[in-house]
Length: 142
Image 1: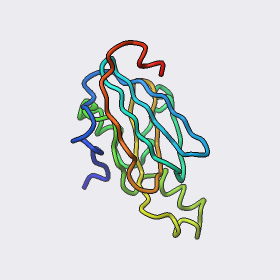
Image 2: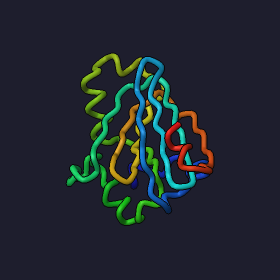
Image 3: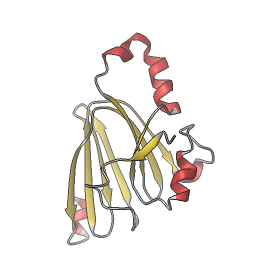
Image 4: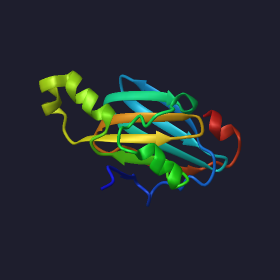
């Protein structure tokens, strides 16, 4: 049984082109912006439980502990965002939080794969998602 699945495939464009990422985390929560040449995707997670970011070239092992990295290679990375079940990072966060984990409502674990980075998020529910078209190179700078 797979411990992961593509997240929001009906809303997010497939990973047929290269995506770049911008991550903004602060008092108002975590926002992950993904850009290709023609599409901008904004994932607003709000206040999160935990976040970690890897440069893709530094990840040589299965960081999730459930075969997702090989599965994505096998799928030829058709999707950008995956929801994970019972993966290492979530277990580590649960262990660190101890009894506080019980007050986290609707915990979700997502992995976002871009050209150069893997962003993992433990959130309180699903993110708000906006998808738009980029009409000029200036849109990436906004």
